[in-house]
Length: 496
Ligand code: ATP
Image (tube, rainbow, N blue to C red; front, side, top):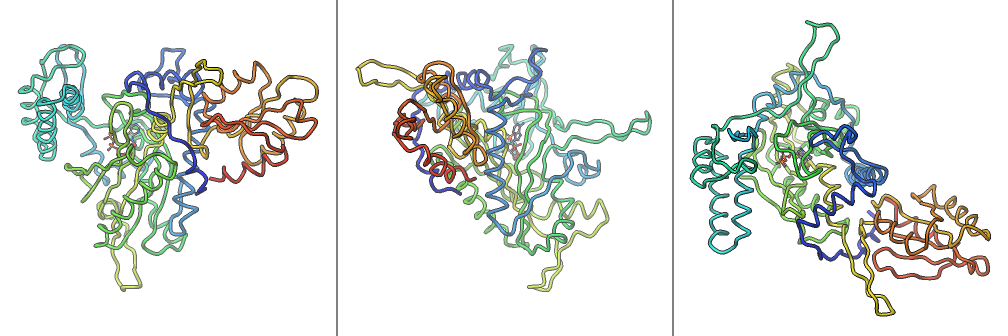
């Protein structure tokens, strides 16, 4: 990865967190990053579309992940599997029987809640009060974890009742019993009624990797340990879908399954935990904004699991999961398909079903992380003693949607032509933007708001001595530099 990226400045966390989150959502819409889906029909709950700058940013995050996981590693290759898979896949993976969350309904509001979310949100209100209540919250969460680990639904309901936890909408404690609710979307394959077969929209991309394990291993002639990476859509019928793009019903995952010798899973789990954190930090995001959260209740396939959590404006929450999936998936696919999925390890002369370490990051959550990290409202002390303000996205420059804005001071005297020539020189290497309307100050502000790291202004002096003003987004420092040096100076910085 480009080492220059570490030079970016860190945004001050000046805004109050709640307001900050609302401001980020509004900003994302106003500046063409994220729109509610089908907004003209009042939107669709927990489904979002990415606008012009949003889709650029999202693509850049994907590229940054893909390069670090595949191109930079000789033993990881990529695939692009279909969303639809044979229905037995989901039987074998355990999703038909186990991919469910304990839910509880409030009888008055008729709203359904995920039990852990309901208790966590109550614990957060206690934490905010501080003192004894804070300790009570910790105790409550520990009890909840223990009950979830045992699937003790009666115990969980008692916990909700004993703490008099109210429905967030009705404000009442009139609860149903707790039930499991499957999160997979189903649809019909086949056009003739009666012939139709129920299939699922994949709830994770991982299974496309498992069912292709031998195809990939053989065609790529890979030896264990090796990995298969994939970026793609996943679908979950989340009951409580909220917090903007944090929890969506249609989202994208960037997953990598690393196939290893049985018995080596602990080392590789530790390895990937550290590697993945390094990837986050390589974007210049401070370490204090991250923490690891070890799972106490393990998913049906895992022998160890942790979340990499980020300090979002609404608190520390999962952005990525590292899971030691054992040989659960491959063994089950072997069982359900009756096809041998073993690997011959010629170093130890043994056939075995490999163990797997998975790294799974939500692309949309990473996008939200970048917005949360980048967004800032700054007060600027001007040289003449007055104050000004700006909204700026300090997006790590390597993934910024637009890298360079080229701005002729006025629309005549040959300045636009010089600007266009510079854009023509740079655009094969990185995304540029041309703008000639409004004052330079206003144009700089608009670029700050979409996170453009560099602006170049062409003025009359350019015609005399070939120099332009290069303006830096984070520091707002401006320097005079030869126009012929711009492309060369910048292009190295943007190689993902
Ligand atoms: P959560 O506990 O938040 O529901 P999870 O533990 O079920 O997440 P995983 O199954 O481990 O999530 O999925 C891997 C990653 O996919 C998560 O770390 C997250 O970034 C992303 N992800 C999962 N569900 C969603 C969703 N509904 N919307 C957006 N991203 C998601």
